[in-house]
Length: 363
Image (tube, rainbow, N blue to C red; front, side, top):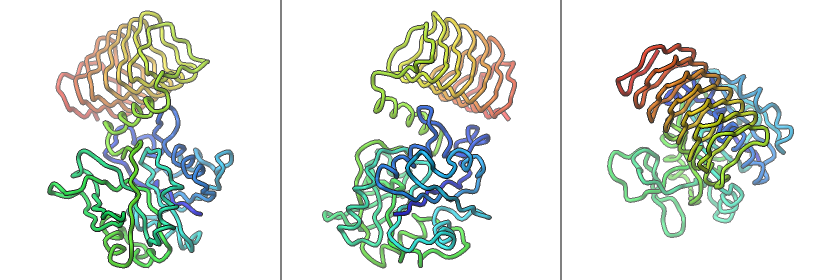
């Protein structure tokens, strides 16, 4: 079975993190999101993955290559212009052929859904399309499915403006029969939820597989941080420290400490903190509820809480970074600087003065 992995979006809501990388390459516990998805498909028996790319496509090609070592064959289809998430399906069909049952997976979901069971339900039910659904607390953010007792999808509404009767959200994992492609127009920007699914619902039976495990739509930085914390709880509830890391400070599990990281004496790490390869945390610093990406150095007596710090940043000593802050790659912050809550700092900036206001964007 072929799987189409949609990885061409600009991910503007995740900036500044996606100014320097495409969203599918954002790391979850040190592993790019797209790796988790390819491994999920491989585990389900998928042997051919076609990745639809556009934004920073070369980075994705270099990261995945041809799939050697991951148990799948990976190929790529490049969008010349943005086609949404439905438009690429017609393009993929023209390039590699989708002439039998195929999977479609969004490249920005983090999940442990059992894809083999989704395919099994699809085949058993005789559906022309099967959608994966997850229960959510805030259905207004998502496409919402109303499902009958037999599992058949009765209705589908994209981001309802009212409180829907159902809380089952579209999880971004689909199984389609080739006949659905006739509802996708060639070369036009279209969305699966808005343009394709309503037409398919009228054409034949559509079923839903309800998944109750891990699932995150990584749409904004808060979602991304929560996905890392959830992965930490699920896969390393007692914490993980790489054998090549040097941890001399105090650790409050669960934490994830990557290869070659150094946590100096007198510092406190965790709980629910992820520091990736090559990060250095100076003496007397506290990093809690945060994600710190590769090769970032944090000085002495610095406080970071519930924030995301990009790659290769230099965070000075006696710095305080309040919750909800997102810092892009290669940012330098001088000693004794305060960054107030929910500030966004773009890559390559040098910050020498405190940011006292909340919700600022530093260009």
